[in-house]
Image (cartoon, rainbow, N blue to C red; front, side):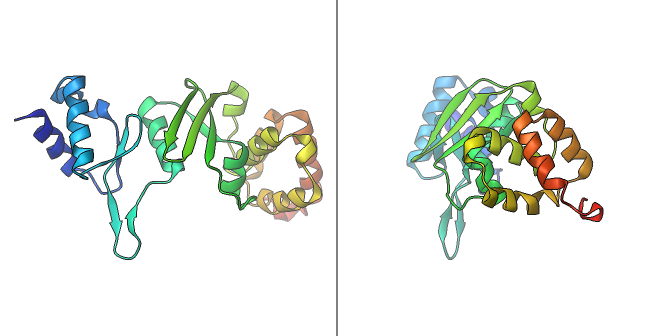
Length: 205
């Protein structure tokens, strides 16, 4: 069986929308043979290349046509492949929290892996190194708030944003929030404490 056919058979066993990488086929041939086979499958529209070394199985919807994976899905797939931890920060975190309607074209994630940038069409996925303290943030909501505020800077924090954050913090687990506030930069911890100190005792999860 040719390398092309062996790779095609393995791809056909996947689910539409799956993201995959060339390393998955290393037992089927040399790196050059795998690269050539994947390039041929892209030309045949069997698969689509998302970024350098990142592919996916085309997925179609009867109304909207081809559906591509989100940048978040791509970032998580890369992190899973590399066995690294990532957390969205900056505008990516604000957007995920619903605090900004602006859709970023540059998704930034902190990581315990190597800093790298992936170009996906007109967009970018950027992994940047971070301290263990930032990666130790645990709350699904509070960690994003802290990372977004840290990237934004104290000068950009205002009452409008504080009001929006207040509603989000009410949904966070109190123990996770306490953990994250201890790890947050001092100005962020002070602002968050000012917000939660106004909560009635029964409003925290």
